[in-house]
Length: 196
Image: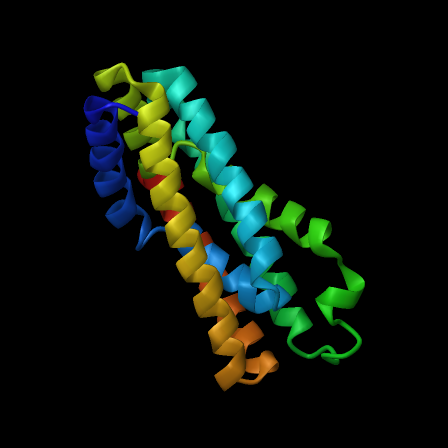
């Protein structure tokens, strides 16, 4: 990677990283980790979703910014709402009977994480930023490297934070908190649907 490409990667990282920190995808990753109790498969699913979304962003450039916000956000709001209901209901289940490591393997957790984040990231600010950087710089590979580094790092932070929560809080409480967070994310996304 030459100096110009490295500068583009760094600029992309610096644009995407702070934008993703307060993002609903980061919160969803944290919640998924607390739900499943297994950060590695959650992170792998989330990282795979980010990889596909970044690839789409750099390939499609500015076209992604033209996707209609309302249908994408409506789907995301419904998914977060369903997640909130499922998490709330699972809080009363016996931890041993619902231990996800037994009931759902690595690939099942990764696939669920992939699906949620993949849909949540469509038309997201970081995807639009990535598409814009690729279109503006003409260096899609360098943009992809910077964006993926930022997104994977934020996802790793969220997965580790979710795992640490389980050490200090009972699983039932974590699931209730996660359900409330998902409900708030559903509400936030629904507001975006009606505001657009």
